[in-house]
Image 1: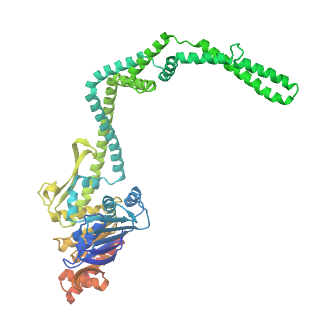
Image 2: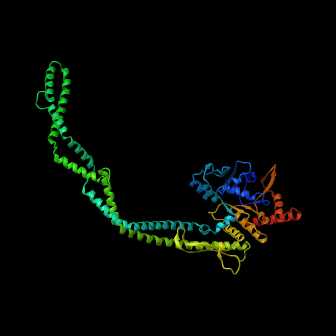
Image 3: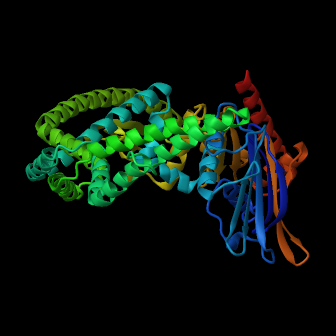
Length: 561
């Protein structure tokens, strides 16, 4: 529900602060006073188009602030959560537009884009005017009318899930069949690659081990020389090798220890050194005995290196080449199983198509049932609105093909007179008729949970009068019992039904023209109704206005019982 609206520097409005209430809020005033300007300002707060021409002359920007009280579990709360906007007891929308055309939009203190504001605005307020009436002719609007209950929504969601899976498989099959001609050539190439790599019988890390062996064999002479020299230096039975020299040192110090035991600690170090040196000597001798630096081994290793080098087109090292081999084998398997895969996909497509058609049929029947009930209720309201011979129904028929929305097409059919065959509403309706049809639809659907909690009727009474105007007033009042309604009107019959009556007036302030709004008290309402009904404030007009207001109050009280 719209709680308040503050408008600054918007067209003729310098500053206006308005408070609204639940029920029917009526806005009246002379033509050109600024009623539509006020609705445009509210529209700007809801995300409608705004431009610099709407900024009051002499000002740098306009600012519109709307405060709403969103209903619990409403679509608005879902949107706030989706766009990570802080929830509060009230929803405050503030929009500014400056002379450079820059928008500043805040929702509960969070900056949002214009597209986000439009989504939130659409969930908050439903504007009913000439351009909005034309939207009734769009297929998506018709489906919105007949698809509002939970059962239809659930079936539609289930249908769309299956439909998307079906189309995904159809696309996949088309791609597979398109690539079939390429498979034979690719399979031949993959098999050749697999054979070339497999023939090498590569082992993990083989290239690293091979490089180590080649490095050793390439330096065989140096290695052999150093190993032999090291062996000789450690121990060759000569007087000056390390082990012989160490034995002499040990013998000398053993003699010293007879006279001074302190040297025993040194002997312990020498004993340990001897053990380590003899182990080193044994290792070096074993290494020397095992050395095989034959040219045949070097040639064999170089040949193996060449084999691996040629395979490096498949990877930078042996491990990468082996991974590529696994991938090649997987691709070969996939291609070899192509026919069975295609057949499996075809069977899945047939199954999904059958399920999709079945859900589409269920969805169409539910829509037909909803359309029949809704159409009958709307036709009843249309006839009350002065078109007593009108025929109205919503037709749901099978479509030529299945789409994301189902397997049917919906249209509104209308005839205003007896003897005329009902035809598509878009082809036969006039502007005035469309306005009343739209009101009938709003009246019937006002109680739906999926509709906005606030409705705006902007001069819906154009071209109406007499009994029809009274019925229109009753319909708007009926809507206001389920939703908050803001209604701009020139008809006294509608203004009489107000729960809150706001009068808009244009006046001069110095050298400027400004628009102001005043909430009318009971006696002021009488005067305004008299002006609207007869254009004067003579006693007879005042008396007639009081009678109209009394009748309206009785009607509203009777409906509340």
